[in-house]
Length: 161
Image (cartoon, rainbow, N blue to C red; front, side):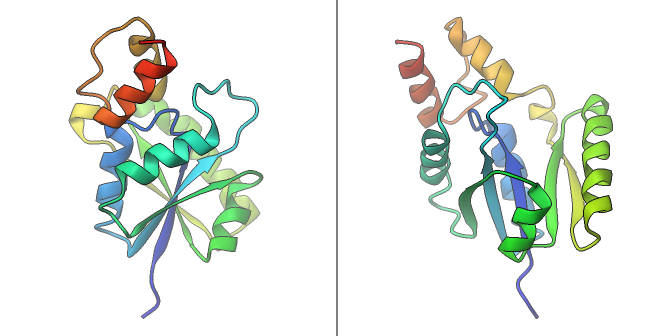
C-alpha cells in the first residue's frame, strides 16, 4: 500500500500550539505530513520564510514523519508535485469555514486529484492565531501557553527583549 502523504500549508508566522495540534493529529491519520510554509509577498510577515522553516524544524525534530518545505504559486500544483493528494486545513470556528470552503472548492475546480480535509482545532486553541500571538507578544503580554518556548524566545528577540 502506498504511503499517504498530506500537505499542511500556512504562513506559520509564527507557529503556535494550535498549528502543532493539527500536525500531531494529522500524523495519526497520514503516514507523513509536509508542513508547507507559504511564500506570500502580500502578507506583512514578522519572520522570514527561512526563520519560520528553522523554527518548525527545531520544534518538529521529534516527529520525523513531518517534513518542512516552502512553496509559492498554486497550492494544488505544489501538492501534486509532492505526490500528495490531500490538503489539511485547520478550522477554529465557523467564521473560518466560509473562506476555507471557498478555497477548497476553487482547488477542487482546478483538479479533482486533490482533496481538502478540514480538521477542527482542539478546544484550548479555538481562539488562537498567529496574528493574536504577534499582537500580544508585541505588547509584552503572556504567550507561554500559546507557543513553544523556542517561538517565545524568537518573538522576544524580534520585539527587542
